[in-house]
Length: 184
Image: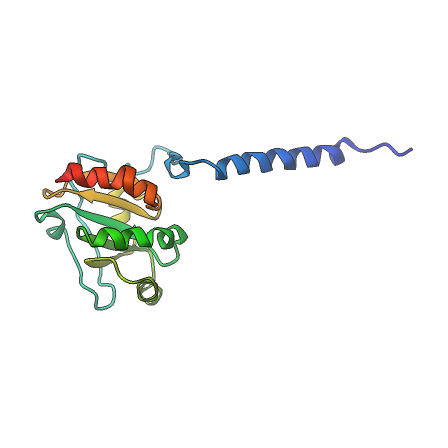
């Protein structure tokens, strides 16, 4: 009888182990809460309690734009970093539409092209009070970790909440709405 090499029986065990690790990671309830890997070189960015840094945005087609002064006007508002190529941005879009009926929601289209961004908004509708496009400088200055990323901002331009990940109904109820209430 032929002897089976240890490599042949070890490969299925390695595959099964990796599959188990990936399955557990995908089933995590708070996958968006997994901290990013830091090398010590990154900009930690804007955190709750801090004022917003300046923005360098360009127009997105002929849609209304906003600037630093807009975010310091009276009232609570949201700033949402998004892109047409971002699948989680598509998933959270219905919640942004819901929020836009309650308060101003400003959108920053991050590292995107104009035509796909406008097509995204045409397809799903535009929840944003005003928009701007960012080639990367604003995202870097704000310490953007990934898309989508949402900031709840008070009347003084101070961040009340920074949330990374898609806004689900659960996140809306348990995280975003309490932050909006606290910012008033």
